[in-house]
Length: 286
Image 1 (cartoon, rainbow, N blue to C red):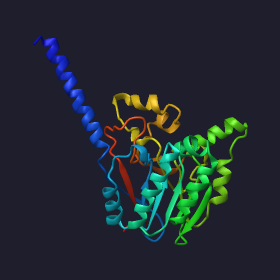
Image 2: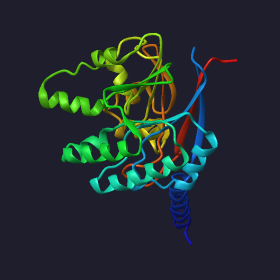
Image 3: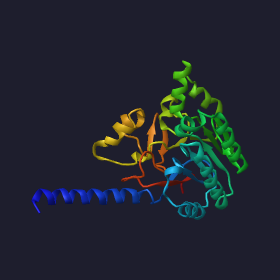
Image 4: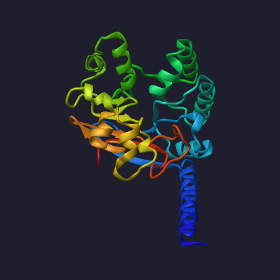
């Protein structure tokens, strides 16, 4: 076989192996632990984000086992659960399984795919999903707050990208900072849950004590020179300007965490972006 043929065959084989691993990575699960120092009684919670149930390959058995082992006080979900209305039933089934291993509080906000792909075309779908979640004891926080244990004020803000779309359609600037100010509680630990970390661009310095977000999938496929960010996240300013795609960051004095998510978008592959559930401990450091 000519040398060129050997080289091409080797490259093709390497590419097939790489694709195989990239799909395999979508089935892995990492539980990352994050500690947040705060003057409150110790509390543990877990964050789920970007399930994309139509393209999620992490087994439910792995997920429920992780929750059962961690024994969190509460759970938060930060958006992008489905992209088609027929996937909403699968999401509710997923939540039912979560409730089998976690009877404590669950707080949830929605993401851009939930809104743009499902709720905007059919507002009744939003009502149906919210009713099903409420029946499961899940608290939906869309520009609302809920106080946990008289010490932690959990604030849910609507998705940033959806807010931008609404502004373009109405010509009216959203007062996100004002909404947050009305939901804040002085003297408590103010925890923000929202889908897209770009919401922080609308908030003043130290507006909350901590924020948990998702949206970027940790890049999903991490490439040299952040090519994926330039292509897929060019509209996401914190990602494209500051390379804030995953993990812990601080912006305008607000510490926040970007969860890489559990599901996938566009293609069922991941590379150097293992699906994750984040387990937080909030409280005084010993």
